[in-house]
Image (cartoon, rainbow, N blue to C red):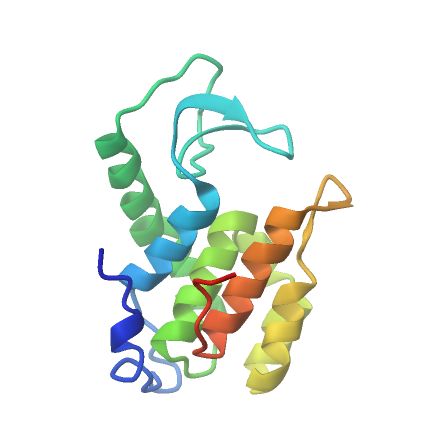
Length: 169
């Protein structure tokens, strides 16, 4: 699978101010898949929410079963119809592909309201790109507890936001 890492240099240009209509790249999807994992049978996540596929939660019930193809389809559909839109709508400053991908992973994991109401967004929209990685790292808890998996995910998102390699984390 092409994770997009090789293309990082080509994709580093910024969007124009106010023209965020970006789409997640293969690298961003790879990051999401790495941390969500693929579960073809419904399970309760660390926060107690019924989940299936790559972290899909809408209408999932105990006993649900999916194919890998359905999981892939639902991930792409959700990203296109929901999560990319949150990032494109809420972020008011130019972004490069790595920054967009990192924020899509963040929002896919935490939801649109988490970004909309965050200090992270206020910092980013003020143009302080250098502070954003630290803000990403703050979001490492589920159910009030720090989780090692969330610490690793936030580290990867933080590294990707900066255009750095994250796959080794």
